[in-house]
Image 1 (tube, helix red, strand yellow):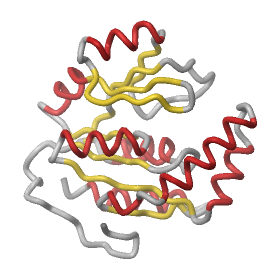
Image 2 (cartoon, helix red, strand yellow):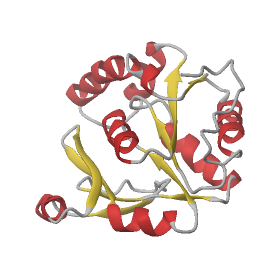
Image 3 (cartoon, helix red, strand yellow):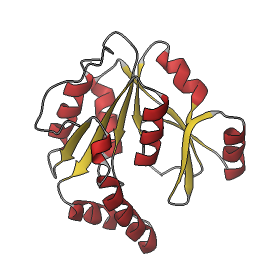
Image 4 (cartoon, helix red, strand yellow):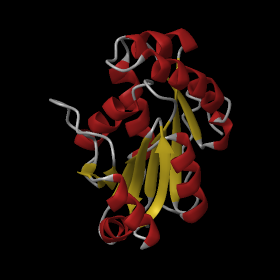
Length: 198
C-alpha cells in the first residue's frame, strides 16, 4: 500500500493493457466528486455502468451511468448473472453491469467509484486493476458531511459507524489519499497523477 506522501507509480506491467481503476472509501468522503473531476481530466478512462434500487437524486449528476430499477428487477439481474459485483448498502442495492464493463474494457480503461465491499470484489475478479482509497483528514469530517445530508438520523449514525470499519481496511488497496477539507483540487491532482500512467 502506498500513502499519499509516496509518488511512486505501480506499473505491474499494465501500461499497455486496459485496466480498471477503483476509487473507494467511506461514505461522505468525497468519492463521487473526485471521480467526476478525474473523468473530466483523463479522457482515456470511461465511467462504469451501474444498477441501483435507490431513487435518483434531484439535481445530482452521477460519475457513472446509472440505471434505476426496482428491487425485483435487480434480483433478476443477480439471478441472470448480469452483475460482476453487487452489494446491499444502507437499504439499497447497487451493482456493476458485467456486459457493459466488458464492452468498455475492449477500447478504454474504466473508472469505478464503489463502496469498499464492491471494491474488494472487483479486485478479486479483475487482476488488472489499480485501487485508490480516499481517507478523510479525521473522522469528524465524515460526521459533519453526513449531518448536512438529507437522510434519517439512524442512517447517518449507521454510515458513520460503517466509515470507521471501512477506514480500517485502507491497507487492502494500492494507494491511500487523504481528502483534506477545502483542498479538493489537490486530491484530484494526486489521483490523476497515479492514473495518467495507464
